[in-house]
Image (cartoon, rainbow, N blue to C red; front, side):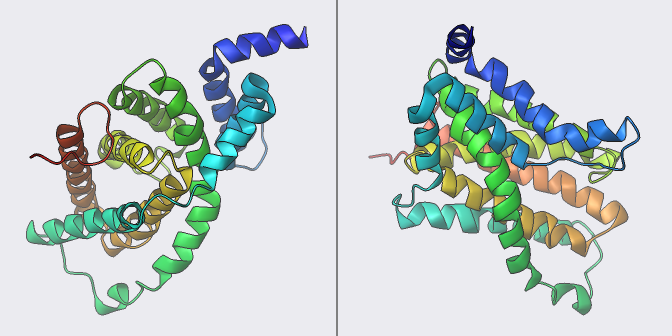
Length: 263
């Protein structure tokens, strides 16, 4: 019986991974429906699902392959710069455009909170980056790329990634910002897949990128605005990410690997 189950998981690993990732992440929200005081999402559920399904589908070699992607550090300095600097560039470009289109200039007491980015980055890396990226990019993306192009695989991961955030809609993300957030998720999935494939399938780089996005954008830039100014920032931010993802896809093609240099 156990061997038969493992055989099914081996043949269709993602059919088990995605439901398990949702269940192990959404349990606080699900418990709240039966009277337990809990809410939100636990990102570590995605990591747990990846480890469980990797073990069932590939045994110890499968888990080892996933763990090696998580600690792959020799990928080239340029990809570390992409992971750490690109999200900040997108965030501050969006900030500048928001001000250009009429947003209120943040006060001095808001600007000087920038050192908090470092603390938020560490928390996001150890909780969100570590929790999500080994599953979305370390496990699901390579499985999808066995049969599909990297671009198509990135979009499919983006669908799951977007749906995974549903319990946060209307709470962490206001309803009028949800469409822009979902657009940014799809664009971010393309950019992260490009980084993953270009940096020798290093999940570590994806974790750094994810932590940088959350620390700089959500943790700092978006806190500088409120009301209509913040809603406008969401729309601008989503378009900036779409432009970045489209540029990468255009220059690299469906493989999403590195930057192609024209002769």
